[in-house]
Amino acid sequence: MTTSSIPGYRLGDTTLPKSPLTKDDLATLKTTLLFGDADVAALRQAHGVVEDQVEAILDVWYGFVGSTPHLLAYFSDAKTHQPLDAYLDAVRKRFGQWILDTCRADYDEAWLAWQDEIGRRHHRSGKNRTDGVSAAPHIPMRYVLALAVPISVTMKPFLAKKGHASAEVEAMHAAWSKAVLLQAILWSRPYAREGDF
Amino acid sequence: MTTSSIPGYRLGDTTLPKSPLTKDDLATLKTTLLFGDADVAALRQAHGVVEDQVEAILDVWYGFVGSTPHLLAYFSDAKTHQPLDAYLDAVRKRFGQWILDTCRADYDEAWLAWQDEIGRRHHRSGKNRTDGVSAAPHIPMRYVLALAVPISVTMKPFLAKKGHASAEVEAMHAAWSKAVLLQAILWSRPYAREGDF
Ligand code: HEM
Ligand code: HEM
Image (cartoon, rainbow over all chains, first blue to last red; front, side, top):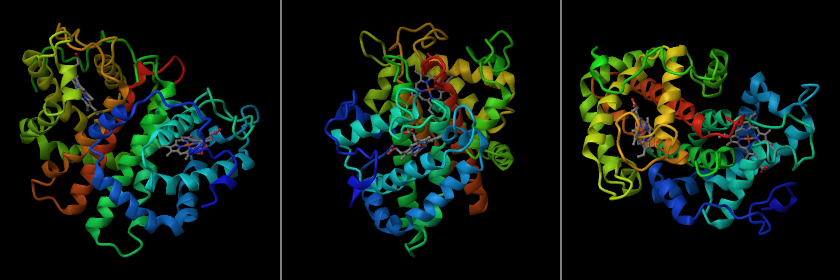
């Protein structure tokens, strides 16, 4: 893994601010989501399935965002409204890495701190800084949460592509869907009023 | 339908504050969630399937909340931490009605205003008022969003119980899951900082 060569990628960077969430907070959140050890195992299995399909998966997701004007706006210049190709490309590299990270997350403090940072990067408090761009300054919380659906639904055919039994594909897909929503929820923290998250 | 006989039920009550969301805002949110006309139709079909199963569904959900201490806490007295049976019962009646409402929602202004009110009822700005109780004053946003998973997953067997083809059950279940997340997202509005939702 050459993650250090991806500009702006900071999972494991010990200089990131700590997440205000404790490991106990994360545990109760996982319980609420029915996210358990079987899901962790299914995600590990999914890693091997999607590892060589990352670019094809990103093509689908970027296709969706690129063809949905109210979403493409957040990758576009705040003034000219032109899509910023360099920004789209820079984020795409980290997005690909995130697919693999989601499959093998270990849910420790470094992972929690990184989720908090990804939240800020969607929120007005941190968007555009990593890539030094002048794009739209803030992605509304409702879209961040709602995009969990396409990011989940579209994964199923990729998980089914390596000949696993249908029950295994279902298990990997359910685990993936929960892991995506779990992260989107963690990313919504900077959006919530003090004490409300 | 004798919804008027359910204390605290206010879908269609024209004295509710208007939702700040426009119909266009709702349309782009639905697009982001891949929620379309086929989902609306599948939910209408689900209505007939679950209509006579509402109490059994509520038994499952109340069983989950009742056996999960960090969730039961929000139905419990803020000081004594004892579950408030009258509160649980009062909410259960509206929750049953909500299942049917979710299947036949028409997504108009009255529906949007009611979503906003349900959001406030989970948030510190409106919790406990409807039933005049002294329960824990606020449900954290992360749990409201996360509970969308159990509320979705547990619905599948009920949707499968009336002998529909597996593809129809899948379609009803996908539509149900999106409709639940859509509403949980709308309910998170009062939690978001000004301008962030
Ligand atoms: C579940 C929903 C979402 C997932 C899983 C997701 C995933 C990601 C990931 C992995 C990154 C890269 C983080 C990094 O390493 O820097 C990212 C950044 C970004 N995403 Fe999302 N995202 C979601 C929602 C959205 C939505 C709704 C939009 C709206 C178009 C969006 C637009 C962006 C943008 C513009 C960036 C770059 C932010 C920056 O300036 O650093 N994302 N997203
Ligand atoms: C997707 C997630 C959720 C759904 C679909 C849901 C559904 C509902 C519904 C339909 C009502 C009745 C609204 C009304 O007519 O007054 C309600 C109220 C309530 N829910 Fe939830 N809920 C969710 C998350 C949660 C969570 C995580 C908790 C934590 C235990 C919770 C606890 C309550 C309580 C205590 C009330 C009564 C609030 C009041 O004082 O008015 N809900 N919920």
